[in-house]
Length: 392
Ligand SMILES: Cc1cc2nc3c(=O)[nH]c(=O)nc-3n(C[C@H](O)[C@H](O)[C@H](O)COP(=O)(O)OP(=O)(O)OC[C@H]3O[C@@H](n4cnc5c(N)ncnc54)[C@H](O)[C@@H]3O)c2cc1C
Image (tube, rainbow, N blue to C red; front, side, top):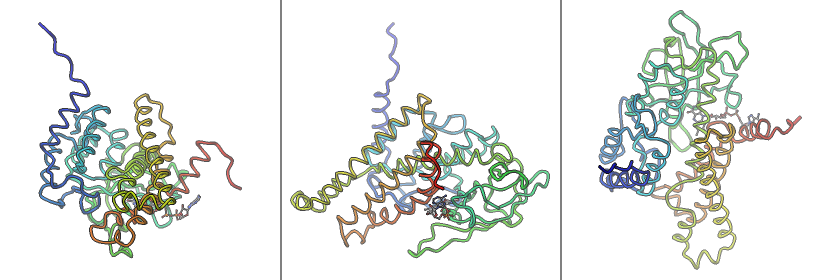
């Protein structure tokens, strides 16, 4: 009897392509990515549209909200190569992320590495199914770049910590259900060693997130106050007092994600937009702009190739610990230039109506600050990766 050949990656690609075609509603394909077109999950979910809800439910049923996370915690169980195929096929179809979530982008990977079995079983499936919306509570009014100077404190009360202090720039803290946060629990230890990584429910007494209104009128951030908030000892991720290790590990995901998704943005390229907006003849009359478009396109490809290489290095266990810093720095700087060029192409028209270009243009500079400012990334790269002498 002839034995059946094991399915190849190409077979998997065909299967995924067919499934996506059949299950991703046409109305949500190729839409600009933004806060209003994304689904963020949570206890009180708000879907951008009925079709997005359907899309999310279908993807969540296959656990393809987190395709490469382990199946025993509610993940899709795909290997890295299959995960990449799924991503490529979604991009090809213009399918949106079914679920945008700091739980997926940041907390999940840290929990999978540092969490206890109980913590994984409790939180990972809820992240995968979009049931809990997470926020990140790192920065404080006196501790941004110098994060380890944070002063939010947790007093040991036996079976729980009593947490007091303030966080700031908490992205959508006022909409989140839970927050992963850095708290000083060992006041006498050196500053990097006295911090614990705590999971805190935002619905409890003693936690209050008040939105910060920006000049645009938007409220993307909150200040988050802890006033005698009770946090069970079981909510410490990793070892008590060693939260800095968890925090740093989590930041590598945040930074890689920012570098990849921003620098190598999918969708219409700058060259395609330039041709569409100015026409071939118009663009031919603008040598400066042509040069800029070419440079940005080449650098975008460079970042995409670098990301592919990092993926392969990661598989081979040879990835540099500084690659997230480099990727974040290059990706966010490039996004700033790319979106500025896009705005010059469209002129005033680009400020109007659907606002996609304007949204990305306004979002790019803040991303040079979020996840640790680019000046700080340069310090890390020069000092630790290149071992250059410090500025005196
Ligand atoms: C869009 C966005 C989203 C964010 N979301 C979150 C969130 O969800 N949760 C959270 O905890 N935080 C969040 N942050 C906060 C972010 O992490 C901090 O803003 C960032 O780490 C910088 O800290 P800071 O604002 O206190 O600036 P500071 O540390 O005061 O820095 C001010 C300026 O000085 C420069 N600088 C500081 N130190 C050095 C140095 N040693 N060498 C050279 N230059 C230096 C910085 O580059 C910066 O330009 C977000 C920020 C932004 C912009």
